[in-house]
Length: 132
Image 1 (cartoon, rainbow, N blue to C red):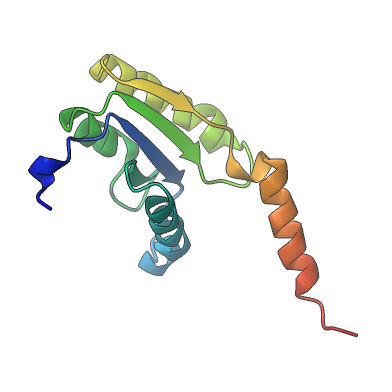
Image 2 (image 1 turned 45 degrees about the vertical axis):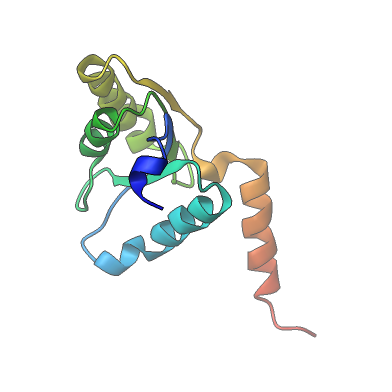
């Protein structure tokens, strides 16, 4: 089907990660993005980085605004609420809100602070032990 048959989504989900010099570092984040896209094909899912990789968050938010997206949820794919999530991210969101007042942007807690995520990580860690 052509893209004209499907109107642009009005909601988007942005996975926000730190970024690294090694391009392979992004592989698990790209896999997470693809998993969500398969689960929610009607949703626009983007991946943005704080530094060292592209797209950055301001650039992706600008692109989404230009596409007609109105609601954006930013999910920090960090294990905890360190300085980047507590200071850098709110500053980026405030700047984006000024540039794109038509966007409603919400920010979720860091994924590593969610009990179900911690339970999954704990299960994986315990499963790495040799079977006795």
